[in-house]
Length: 149
Image 1 (cartoon, rainbow, N blue to C red):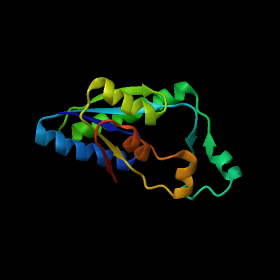
Image 2: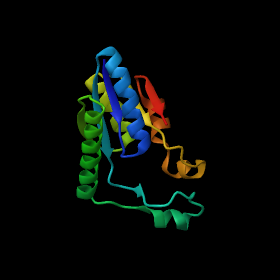
Image 3: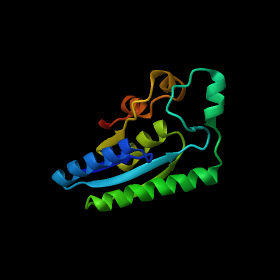
């Protein structure tokens, strides 16, 4: 069984990897962690809900491709190290593009049996601005998606 774990450096993504390791161990499966980089927009700082467009403009910023790639590589390396700590070898792949399209497309193209993803539980207001990757993966994927908190 081939398992795909989408990681973003969050605690919830680590939880998703831990859950996938438990499943892979039980079924003698393989795990690949992926991180999709889309150097268009990301959120900067603060856990308070975005309340105005001005607030959104100050907290959503552009990022250079090289910076995005480096951050993506670091996230994947941390996930591989976490897999090692759990006693499981994991492969990795850095994807380019919007995670909500790249991850399910990669899963289809490479024949994965399931996707595991963490969910941060962001506020409804922020989710309406940024969208929910976990929610959209569930909607777009042709394979089962397990959302882990």
